[in-house]
Length: 258
Length: 318
Image 1 (cartoon, one colour):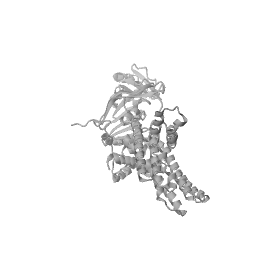
Image 2: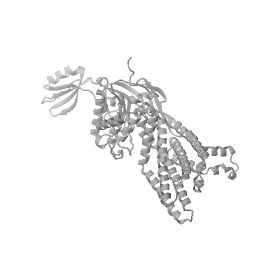
Image 3: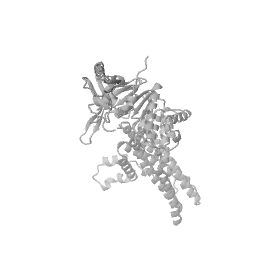
Image 4: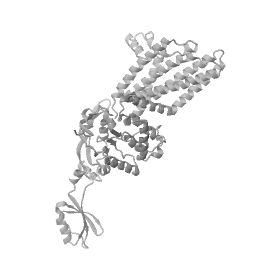
């Protein structure tokens, strides 16, 4: 493994260890599992809708708790290292700022992957244990959830290099909310006819389209997401992450650690 | 060809931006020209806020200089190759709560590309060196400030560096820890390593350094061998005298510093020494000892920095 890559992997491995040892992560996983189990109870109350309700709640829990982890741990990834000055020891070693930044990102993305994997396992176990099939098409909705989380991490890291942790958390949550209601932005001129078209179009282009990554309803009705759509959302997420992470990296590289 | 010195800075300058609305720049380091010679222990001393930490942050790339040049072993600061030859300990290092010292040293070793087996051996050796073998597998959240400082010292040595940059290495240590770090610096010097350490504790610099660089308000005011710096003020002699029963008369050129029963401690200029001893003898006194009065580094600085002992403290707090 090349020197640069091995250093990125070292930082990523340490970040993974850090996040796994954070108690908050265990709590979130615990709550995600709890929500899936509660879905089981709700399912028993519904008529013929129990499987759908179970899948709905399971996928929504994955999305929600994954987002919490992505926002709050993502913001703290770099800012905590700066505030506590643990970064000073690392950057004096043959570790570039870029390697550090990418390593942190990769570490949290891996944590989210593992976390999502555990929750997926929990949902499938619940489905099988209650006599429903382990429906593989669920994965076609879970994969875009993961892509959305990766975009959220990139934003959290970008904002954490620009401002305080608190403000960075607020801004990241703002992006998540705006991205989930991007149609409101698109249709803004219907409510505010005076809004300039360039502003509305610009905002709509900048805000990540989390709605476009949301296939939960479609999948719970048994309708799988086609392969070409999955390829498109993969490319969309990759391009988005590259731009946002690039901006974060540029900001991090120019920082003075006083 | 002779190898370039471990560290050279030329015209190194840094200012900090102050204020939000009406911004101004406060100079933190001005035009620093410094050379650290191979195998020496150089003390970088000055009061709090004089620019010591700023210098070390500039050297390690944590701050960007406004102007000037830094070369480690002849290589520019932007090159990363020199980092394999340098170890750094910041002031009050924060180490990850969730890691153990063994894990942390392993992480540091990985960043240097040290192979696994070598890392394991290295961390065992370093933990023994800083006296933490028995705490190797405890999470560092349970550690005292002194224990964290020891882990900080160990991580600075993980790559077996030729040059060590230590920012207030004795800070926060108990007497045992201070002795350990002092001995370690002396051991490193014996092993031919070069050490640059900043301190505002002058007795540490006095004990350990070959040369001292004195910083005041961001400017380097003096660099020199400790002996040279102190010898300039060594023209005074201390004479211990057994005083006669009638007491010692006033002797021109001698200053009575202290009376201890039938003994007196007198300070005499070197040029007056023979005459004063003669006068003491004539008065019936007896000279018990004569020794050069070598001012301590602290006294030297108080004089140079314009402070007075027991009065205003040019070092600020701490």
